Structure formats: C-alpha cells, structure tokens
Length: 88
Image (cartoon, rainbow, N blue to C red; front, side, top):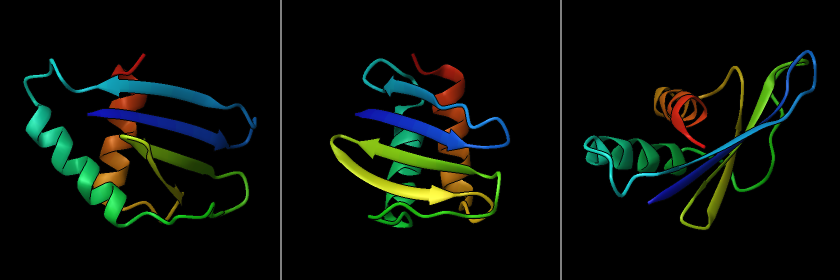
C-alpha cells in the first residue's frame, strides 16, 4: 500500500509532503487499518478547519480524501504523523 500525505496551511503556510510504502514494514497490518479508518472518515473535497490550522490531503493507492485541524479523527492524526515522520 502506498500512502501519501500533503500538509498545507499553518501559520507559515509551508507545504510538506511525504510518501510511505508499507510493503516491507513489519507493522503493515496496523498501518493498513489506520489508512482504512482515515479514508472512511475523510472528505472527498478540500475542507478548512481553523485559521492558521493545517489542512491534509491523504492519498491511499490513488484515492484521495481531505481533512483539517482540529477535526482530525484519531486514526487520521496517527496516520498523518507516521507518514510525515517516516515517509520519504
């Protein structure tokens, strides 16, 4: 599974993007479950949360959803954090 996260917005307005391939990960089942939950609760059109908050675009195997702070679900928050921290 290929997961891409793009984060935009924030106080400085700097975009950040990372991609994670789960094929060689030992925690792949957990990451896949997070991705399924995050995708199920995301929106198909861009959404905006609070001023100066972050906006996220999550793409899993070609399907994209959108979410924004402060209304991220726990699975979205964990997935976004993981991909931005460990992805390339």
